[in-house]
Image 1 (tube, one colour):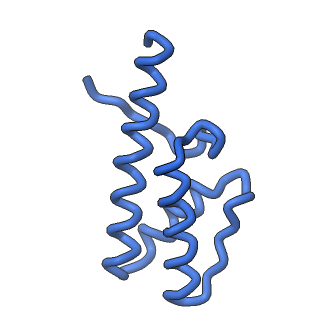
Image 2: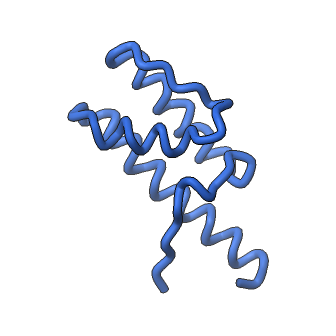
Length: 85
């Protein structure tokens, strides 16, 4: 089964602690990399993270983003199973 997840449809309150930890880790890495400020409180923070990750060549940031994507999929899949979907 393949799950397609649209980041713009996901709210942070749907994510588990591991996903939130990775979001925070990403925002800190972006700030230390080039001073970019990504605010976790923003409604579209996941879209901002995605755009930043695509635009950067920094391997650390790309690695964090890759981990975040995997965790979001895992979290959404677990939520679907819990709801019986």
